[in-house]
Amino acid sequence: MRLLAFILFVACAPASASCVLEGKILDSLPNMSCHAPNLVAAGRVGSADIARLKAAGIRFVIDLSEDSETPAFDEATAIRAAGIEYRNLPIDGAAGLTSAHVTELDRLIAEAGNQPTLIHCASSNRVGALMALRAASLHGESSQAAIAIGKSWGLKSLEPVVQQQLAMRDAGTYKATPISPKEEKPMLVYPRIKTAGGVYALATSVTMPAADHEYRLVIDATSGEVTEAGINRRLEIAARAVNLYALAGVRADQLKLAVVIHGKATPAVLADVSYQKKFGKPNPNTALIAELHKAGVRISLCGQAMIHAGFTMSDVHEDVRIELSAMTTLAELQADGYQLIP
Image 1 (cartoon, rainbow, N blue to C red):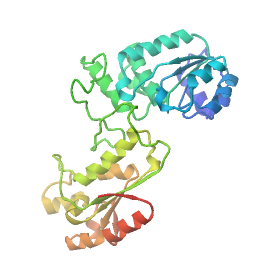
Image 2: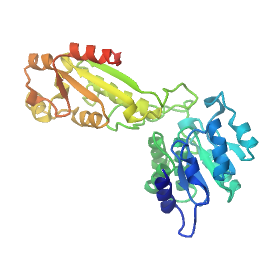
Image 3: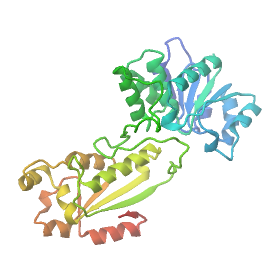
Image 4: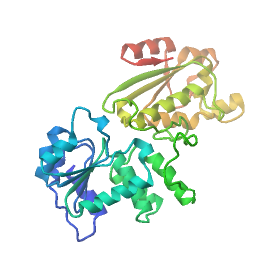
């Protein structure tokens, strides 16, 4: 973590700047990054962290989380009791990424001045999002540079929302605030799977899956129903599940997702050559299968259904596992703690 802080310091600071913080004391903070000479970004702060903040030399805290996120911990009181200045700028997820909040964060950073300052939310995701928009709107950075800056501050699942705002800015159609539910339907975002399964970003005040939990899900895919793009509907649901959990801040390795293909869904997982031979066109699911596999999704094909449909193992996409049967695979996964999504 000290090495990461040093790399970020070198990359983001002027050559004459030096990090005045005792960064190693803050290693226990989630997603901590040091931005010399006097700024630190991090995730959630708990009661056990207050003494560490003071020992590290932090003198100013900008909290981007809402009080409702930590009902059992009064951060403002604890921080101020330690003799540290505290400011709260609650950012309500994607809905809080407004130009007014970008300007207010910039004002708070200016207010902190040269004091060692911590800017945090639950995971540093909102910190990174606002810093990306700040870099673009107030400091004239390109969209690409702004995204890179945001990522160095912790930008993760809100990246598609930030990219959408930056794209609108570049196109000259940027609004002062994101589209609200009362105006028009917001655009779909694709946090992890880009080819399908778009989801809508909601405020952090809504109930979200716990980001530190492991989830085990299995999708029973027997239908041949397809989307307008020709993608199998159950594979599209798998992509949406991955994106929903990504939007909630769940790491890819914490989501164990399996899709069991059988019945009329069987042709969806054919290799392009075999699909072309059978249907006269490339398999519209090919890119999605590869992307789901890369994201750690287990795609299994029922061997019984494969043979019944007249296909062989060589006809199947290389990222698909061939199982004895859907019945046995579904039973095995559920016995291993997977929740069935019928």
